[in-house]
Length: 163
Image 1: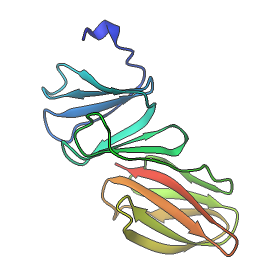
Image 2 (image 1 turned 90 degrees about the vertical axis):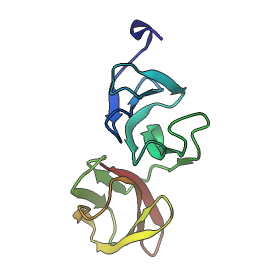
Image 3 (image 1 turned 135 degrees about the vertical axis):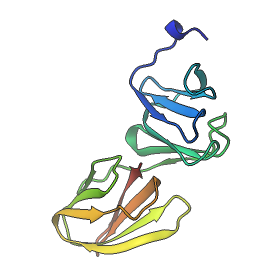
Image 4 (image 1 turned 45 degrees about the vertical axis):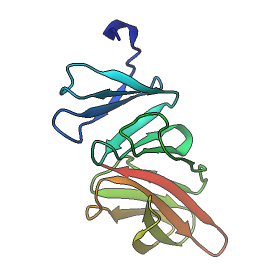
């Protein structure tokens, strides 16, 4: 595919190995290279990506619009595996996303909080006070996680990426 025929848009790139890399474009395409970035091939189209992260050449995640997380277990080939949609929650805000060491969580009510990975495993539990909270996530491995905030009235959740 000729480079001038691809709408590259803004790219979010991850290389899990020296020669193998993936790029998610805000134009809705996912690209793959196996030669260190010399050539790129479109492997998927149809989801606007905001970030991309691969643990190895097969297992990866693309974070997209409206809380969509797409997981691939076959190197980005079609089909891309499972897709999860997370509702946007009023009263819960977290940033930066993606993050590396700290996550700022702003909530409207005191809550018990949990961080779970995408296998459903609980990786951390703690208490958040109403307002702005800084959460240390430096001990977590790169990947996609869900923050759940639970209080007497309701449960709110939001997805975040660690790179």
